[in-house]
Each structure stands twice: as structure tokens, then as C-alpha cells.
Length: 506
Image (cartoon, rainbow, N blue to C red; front, side, top):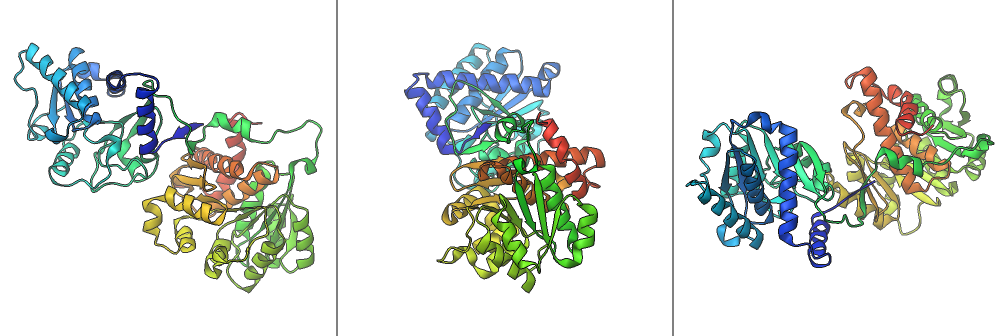
């Protein structure tokens, strides 16, 4: 597991390192600059391109100080280096001033008169590399004026670009573009990744992100990113002496008229995650299809309300919504599940549309009797639940999901290219997926996976996180086999076993 930091926590960690550990700021800056130089040399194969000059564009703050220090180190290594100061001289930080003075003395010792270059040279020179050290993580306003002109010129230079900490113009806390941003091929950041490195559109501007330790201890953070090694510890163990009852009972309420496929994908995915027994409650018209495609599932018709109620009494997790529809039958099924499901409930797709339409989460009386509610909206469904626009959801997905989860005491899986999973306190960003998963039924697979893992006794938040990671991993496996353009949700479902194997889980 890797912690993800916002700007405030990173600044606090930096300050604590300087004050509590007594590591001077100048030492941290030197380590940061060394990390930038070492990483850039390896990534861009710079030793083979020493005939081309390097430009370092520095701002007024400590990010600019990192840039000046990097310029000095690269110059010491035999590169031809030029510095462009793009900041405000009156607002330079102490470290930036110190590093700029060192750079000036280095240039004087080398009998160079061009201590700092002019903006026009960005276009006039064929640079081997431009290093962006203008703003860093401290940016809190939109970029305009001469700063905008400099960034436009960097982007138009037609040469490789490396960013120090985060591309100038990318908001550290949410990945928003502050008017304009540097398009980097490489971003070298320190201690831990930041939200802006992972969330779109900022992620598109970062290129390859390398996280380098420089002596700043990574603080505990509510934000995290799961890795394959984390899954073994999270997933329930299999026992040699066991039976289907050992691995939980799940209910999938899905598949309205003409939507048997949604029920199939959710039920099959729950089984693929190791669930002992899955009951599929579907519209009667889908019986033949379901029992032909998922014969291992227990079939239950929507009109068997008494049997459905008894089943709800004995399950460990339920999912409602995939292909449910929004007609009267769907409303009746949702109401019955709301009243009788007293364990973990995953609400997806049409269930979310009905919840939003009826304002169930905003009711003063508890709308759900379940022990834990997990919702799995995409941005459009989230917008309907929150009563805001899709663009507002996407502008700050972490804040949107966290505030909604905290207000309504639920777990939110806000699905996107980078999904946000949160219980209102803990935050997990999942980036394991791929564009091949942008196909009908992908969300049905995820709902079944979350339900299946929760049915096996996983803590609901961990079940949601693990399912999202495995879902994305399965997507990559399916994409590698079928191609991103051609894969379907059936391919995704069939790749779930390989996702477990990739994580070392048998």
C-alpha cells in the first residue's frame, strides 16, 4: 500500500522533517535535485545526448530552488545548462535565493555571462531537455499573464520535458488544470504520490511519475493506493476442510425484462471471486437464459416475494441494480430489499437511479436496514445522487465522494478511469483498469465482485477496494488477450481468475 498525499500533508511532512528530525532544508533540496538529475539521466538517456543543451525553468519558491540546484548538478556532470527565471524576484523563498546565488557563482567561475537566459530562447534553441521547476505543489490559483506565456512556450518547444514534483499548472489535490499546465514526459516527485499525479486530467500531464525518497518520512494519510502485494493480506483465506457454506451466501437482484446479461455478469463474477453460493433473483422471463449461462446459481423469480424474503434472512451480502430497470417491478424489488436486507448491500446502476429519483438517502427516516451500504455510481449517477452537474463531480471527485459518504454513512465507489473508494474517512484510489473496460456490463461485473468478497466476510470497505483493484487487473488481462477495442464484459468476467493469480492468490 502506498499513501497518497495532498499539498497540506506534504508541506507538513516537509516542515516536520526540518524541525523535528533537524534535517536542514538545504539538505532536502540537494537530495531532491539529485533525484531529479539521476532520474532524468536514466529516463531520457541524457549521457548519450550531451551535445544538446538543457534548460531549467525556475519559479520563485522552493520548487525553483530545486531547479537551480538541479542545474548546478547537471552542469557539474558535464552538460551545457541554461536557467530561465520565470518567477517574481521580490517573492523568492530563502532557499531559492540561496540556490540562485550558488548558480551565479558557478557561472562566474566558468566565465559565463549568461547566468540567466531569456524567454525567447525557449523557442530558438533545440533543447535536449527542459526541466519545469516553476510552481510545484503550492499552486492555488489559475495561471495567467507571463506565467501562461512561459508554459505555452515550453509546451510548444517540441522537446522532452521533466517536471519537478508536479507539472506547473496541475492542482496537487484534485488533478484540475489551473488554466494551463506543462505537459511533462516525466514527473519526479518526492516521498509519496500526490492526488494530482493520479487523478485526471492532471494524470495526462504528468507522463511517467517516479516517486523518490529524499529523507522525508511519509506520514499516515487517509489516501492510499493498493498494490498487488496488499491483496494477500486482505482476502479471506481458504480452508482445506471447508464446504460451500464456508465461503458465504450472496444474493444478486438484477436482470429485468431483456436484461438477463446484467444478472449473468454479476452472478458469475460473484462466483469467480470465490463465493460459496449465489442466488440470482431475476425477472421470470430471464429464467432459461440465466440457468443456461450460470447453472451453478440458485434461481429465484421476482414474483416469489416470500422466498426472496426468506433468502435475504440467510445471506451474507446482496447486490441490487444491474439491469434492474426502473418500472414498478423494479421499485417493488428494491423496496423489499431495503426492508429485509440486514447485511452488506451493494447498490448499483438502476438501483441508484431509483434511489436518486425517490430521494431515499435524503430521507429523515432510515431508508435501508442493511448493516453496511455500498454504492457504485459512475459520474452521471453520482451527479443525480448529489443533485449537481457531472462536471462538478469530475472537478473534484475525491471531495465529492468523501463528503457524500460521510454525510450518508455509506461506502462510495465512484467509478471512473481512476476510481475513488471511500467510507468518508479512508480514501483508496484505484488505477488498475484500462480503456478496454469502457464497455457495457463492466459495472455489473464490479458489483458482483464486491458482493462476492463481502459475502465471504471481508470488511465492506476492504471488499470494495480489493474488488476494484482485481476488476481493473482483470480488465488488463482481458485487454491483453482480446485487444482493448475488442474485449467485452464477458472477457472481463472470464479474466477474474487470472487477476487473483497475478496477485499471488490461489
